[in-house]
Image (tube, rainbow, N blue to C red; front, side, top):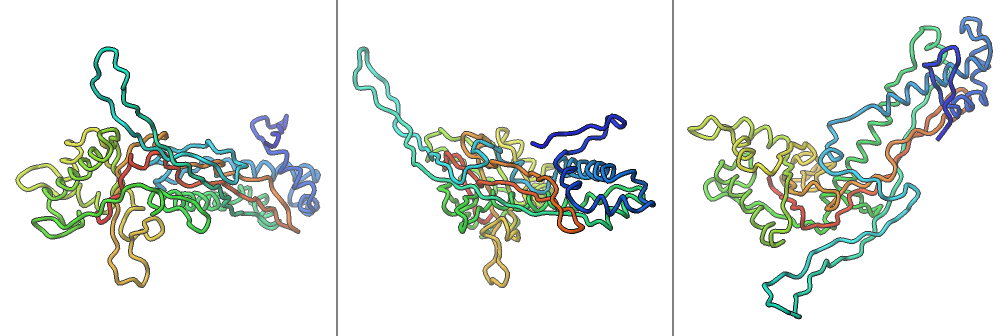
Length: 354
């Protein structure tokens, strides 16, 4: 990490020594200090001034949050893999065996175990950059305004957006696994048409058919794991969430969503636009451009527990010290992402067609 220097005259103003050093090594301070209108006493003053500006902008970018990207909110985030690693090994587990009633002095106790399959995950770097030229610095100083921080915000936004996408769907070409990847061993449940409506989507099914669907998912998870895995989260498409919250059950004051929330007290229902039937970047079952096949919304029933599965980010968003090119200062931004790490695939269920 770069050292932080403090100006004795303005103790509340800090700057990154690496940024100030990069500025001093360039021809930018001399260009700025040579103009009387800029009111700099020396090249060093100009370097310190704009190093402070960059520190302020970087801090704002670090503080920025983009709540519309839901992967980092819906799933536990871990940083267990070293940021310098190119790959890592983990195990996908399945509990095996069972207990039984035994007699005194029994010697034939049944053996239980955890069957683990060794898997390899990979870490990839993602990055972008932003910068300012000498005229933008000159205009900022003369107008008494800070440099435009929206460029740093944009750099953070695009890295966070790609991180979000990689956690949801991975990237086969780069061997990254996502929550909705077809190679992550999470069971897939495909909804069937309801008995009354003959419709599949929750946007068209009646309340009884929706309740029956949820019952089927929970029953299947219960039976397939012998009651070991119990979900506490249900992510559904945001358009479905809105529809259920506004659809009143006939002859009652309750909406379908409220009925589910009241009768599934151990399960939190979360709206997620990445699961919509139109979200082609994050939902592999969504309608692709030019396709005649209707897109399908997806649900995800799972246990929120980092021991079950997590979004692995070895190195979150990082801004490197400034670099200069001719009359421009450029800030490189980077993150390292491993996608989703799924230790217990049976602790989740993907529901297609919701």
